Image 1 (tube, rainbow, N blue to C red):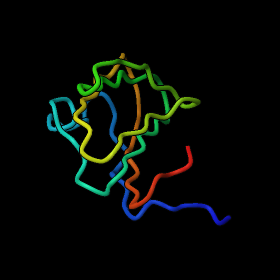
Image 2 (image 1 turned 60 degrees about the horizontal axis):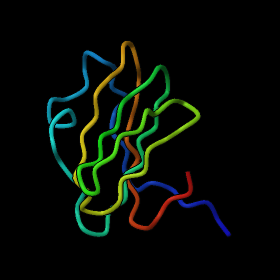
Image 3 (image 1 turned 45 degrees about the vertical axis):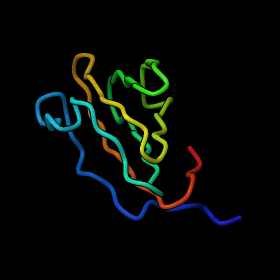
Image 4 (image 1 turned 135 degrees about the horizontal axis):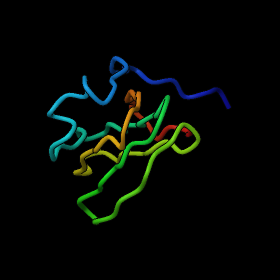
Length: 91
């Protein structure tokens, strides 16, 4: 089976450049999966429906399902990006 590639990726953000829109409640569009990849440090991912939290690291990416409300919070110095897919990605 061929690797599933993202159709778009954000720039790399750090704790200072992470946009306010990603720090506040938002969701992906219908039919869009997001995969948050932490390149350095840690990032808290808060899912709002169903409610839960997970700490993301370079070894532990965070999957966002289509239309799933969530937000992220840096934990100290970090670097991250989001890859977007039109089908469920492999982590």
